[in-house]
Image (spheres, rainbow, N blue to C red):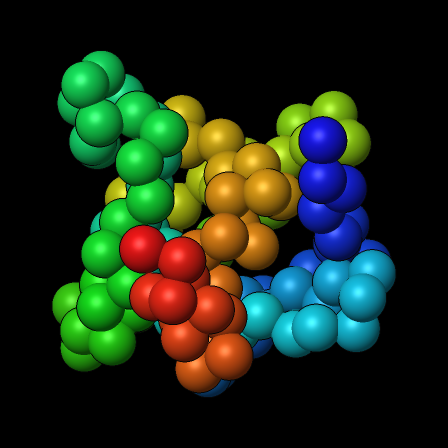
Length: 116
């Protein structure tokens, strides 16, 4: 089984409206908050039949529809983050593996496209 990098640091920037993860391999992932909310992996948001599927990477390119001011991060064991959003939603558990797989940077999206 391939070992995935772990998160060393997670920072929310309410002004820039993004969440930045610095990984153990020094890669940096920057998610627009609105895109991350749209990519919520919970059954309510994606339906039971789509759980586990990664969202279309273009979801992170869409313009933000909402300004997120009170986002809270809650660790789930040592494998995930639960995000508690301003709209009251808090059932999405974003595993570190999923977050790394969804990285919207050019390098990661090119690598994902080459695999498909």
